Amino acid sequence: MNSKITNFYTTIQTKIKAANEVRNQFGKILSPDFNIFNFWYIDENKTSEILAHFLNPKETHHQGDTFLKLFINHFNLDFEYSDDDDITVECEHSTHENRRIDIVIRKNKFEKIIGIENKIYTWTKDQDNQVKDYLLYLNKTTKDNYCLLYLSPNDKTISDLSLSKDDVENYSNQNRLKIINYEEDIINLIHLFALHCESERVRFFLLEFEKKLKELFIGENYMDESKMITDFILENDTNLETSLKVAINLQQVKSQLKEEFEKQLKEIATELNIKIIERAFYPSKWKKHSIYFNYEASGIIYGIAKEAPTEAKKVYFPEIQKTFSEKFKTSN
Image (tube, rainbow, N blue to C red; front, side, top):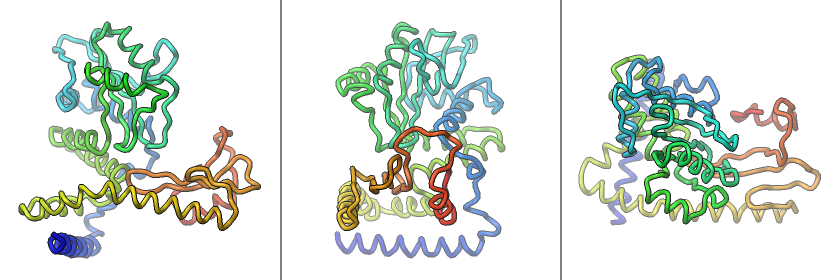
């Protein structure tokens, strides 16, 4: 097996090198790194807005309920309707407790409801009783004809403060709660949308959106490279067997890398005599900021973090911001 794994990686490296050479040679013609979504900031509100647009049969994509049907079938949702039914899709739907559900799909006002709570960052915290309140609201509003989809990166789970583990299990068993993720669900669903879309313009938008989501959640910047690796894995039984054995150990590899990384952070903090809590450094003269590290599905994010809410337009640490902006993509 050791020789199989060695040969597997050697072949993959050779193929990637060849693909990169072709990419460099024909980059001017193909522009593989160009993406229309790089021109604006993709946050939770924007992804919710895009998803709601395509799930709405009345929107300007002019594909009717094609995308909604694919969505319902993909997640096996109990949401039957006919042409005579009124389907509405809205973002930021207000509940009785003045909370806002990111996306709500309704049949005939409140006959049936699908709610979607969208979290695109692993570090976004659930509010106290947030998911619980959403479920109680949907149940009260529709008399048990509802389902809430909790959408997040694969590494994020519902916090106990938002909904207890027992309630997560109970609601899930009743098909009132479905926990879905971007990596395994939404990316594939958007690709499915593109395959069934009859408009070339809309299909192009969907494929660009899929590419951006892969970049954000899988760390994949060049889709052809991923396809090449996938084709190689499926080429024969030996490649498939080897890749599956490698995949089984990837989570353990990630865990060991995290342990080593956090060990090194503590060593740095000790060496420089800096206070550290989890993965945040607190220099002695800093009152409202920390040097913060966090994990994302595609790697590590890091920077200067504010410890308390401040004015959105007020700029702090101009020297640091200037240094970061010259080397990295940043935002205020």
